[in-house]
Amino acid sequence: MTFATLGLIEPLTRALDTLGYQTPTPVQAQAIPAVLAGRDLMAAAQTGTGKTAGFALPLLQLLAMEGPKVTANSARALILVPTRELAEQVHESVRQYAEHLPLSTYAVYGGVSINPQMMKLRKGVDLLVATPGRLLDLFRQNALKFNQLQTLVLDEADRMLDLGFQEELGNIYKALPKKRQTLLFSATFSDAIRLLAGQMLNDPLSIEVSPRNVAANTVKQWLVTVDKKRKPELFVHLMRKQHWKQVLVFAKTRNGVDQLVEKLQGLGINADGIHGDKPQATRQRALDRFKASEIQILVATDVAARGLDIEDLPLVVNFDLPIVAEDYIHRIGRTGRAGATGEAISLVCADEVNLLSAIETLTRQPLKRQDEAGFEPDHRVPDTDASGNVVKKPKKPKKPKASGGGKRNLGKWVDSGEKPEDVAPSVKPVRKVPVFNTGPRKRKP
Ligand code: AMP
Image 1 (cartoon, rainbow, N blue to C red):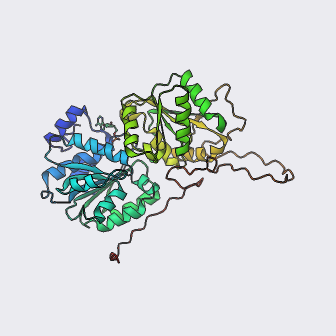
Image 2: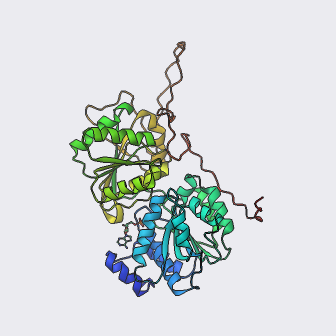
Image 3: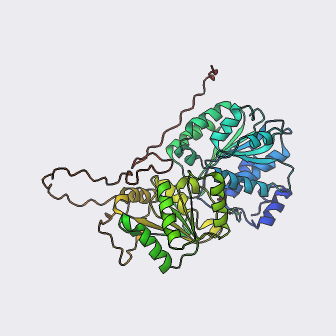
C-alpha cells in the first residue's frame, strides 16, 4: 500500500517522499480514506504511530481541492491541541506536508504576545493550529471568525480534558458552525472522551489501531525501587553506570524539575529543564537544544513534554511516576517512536505504590522490578499482583498512640509544598465530564 493508493494527490506524496515516508502507518491507512470521504472520526492510536499525518494529510487535500478562498479573519480548518509545544510541532508537520500546496497555515498559542497573531489572522488562514485558551481570546477580540470553518480536529483530546480545558472546549463548540467535519484523535480513550465524542461528532467512524491503553511494545519498561530521598543519587548512579546518552526525564512538579536540574548541573552534567513557569521562548530553546543533542538530560513536567516528537530518543526516565496513569503511556511514548526501540525506566518509592498499581492496571502488564545494589529501599515498595493491585500484608496489631505523632502522609502529594503541574492534588484523579450547553448563547452585559 502506498500513500497514492489511499487517494492522496501528487503534491502531498511528493512532500512525503522528501520526508522519507514510504508506507502509511496503520492509523494513516484507516484515517486518510475516511477523512477524504468526509466522515467524522474518532481515532485511538498509540503514541508515535503517525496520527498527525493521519489527520493532517487528508485535511490539507480537502482544503486544497474543495471550498471557497479564505476570507479576512477566518480559518477553514482548525486543529486544537493541548499545549504550546504541541501546537508548534503539529504546525511544523503541517507546513512540511503542505509544502507544494497553495495553502496558508499558522499556529496560535498563549504565553506570547497576541498582537502579531491578530495581524497575521487579518488575511485569514486556511489551516490554523491553536491551543483552546488563546483561540478563544482571539475569537472574543474579533480577530477570528468561524463562519468559514469546514473541519475541526481535536488532537490529544483526553489531555485537553485533563488540563481542564472543558469549559473552553464548550465555548468553542458553541461558536462553531453546526455543519462541519470533526476528527477526534487521542492516544488514550476514557469514558469522558467518549462522551465528548458523542456530543461533538456526527456518526463517527471509530478507529482503534492498537488495543486500548497499551503502551508501545517497542519500549522496554522496568522499574527500580528506591527511597524517595535517594532518587537523585540513584539517577546519577544509573546514568554513569549505564552510560546514558540522551534522556528525557519526567518529574512531578515544577520545583522537582528545578531541583534535579540544579543538582545535575552542579555535578557538571549537561542538563536543562522545562515546565509551565518558564517563559515560552526559554522552553522552546531548551527543547530545540535537546532535539539538536546539545543538551544531554532534559527534565520536564508532563504539561511541558506532552506530544513531543524527538527523533531517536533512546530513553525516558520517570523520576516520579505520573499522577494520571494514562500519562505513563504518553511519557514512554516519547521513545520507541516510528518503529525504533526504546527504554523507559521508573524510579519508584513506597509512596508511589498506588500510582504504580494504577499504571499496571491500565497497561495490563506488571512492570519488571530490578533492584540496584546499594540502593535497596528502607521503605519497601509493596508488591503488586498481575492485575496491578497492591498486595496487602496482614495487619499488625495496633500500637498504643504516642502523643504528638502525626499521621503519615502516604500517597499524598504535599511533600514539596507544590501541586503537580496542572493536575489537582489527588491520589486518584477524577476526570470531569464535560457538559456542553447547546442552548442559546447568553448576551454579554
Ligand atoms: P506522530 O505519532 O504523529 O507524533 O508521529 C511520530 C513520528 O513518525 C514522527 O516523527 C513522524 O514524522 C513519523 N512518521 C509518521 N508517519 C510516518 C510514515 N508513514 N513513515 C515514516 N515515518 C512516519
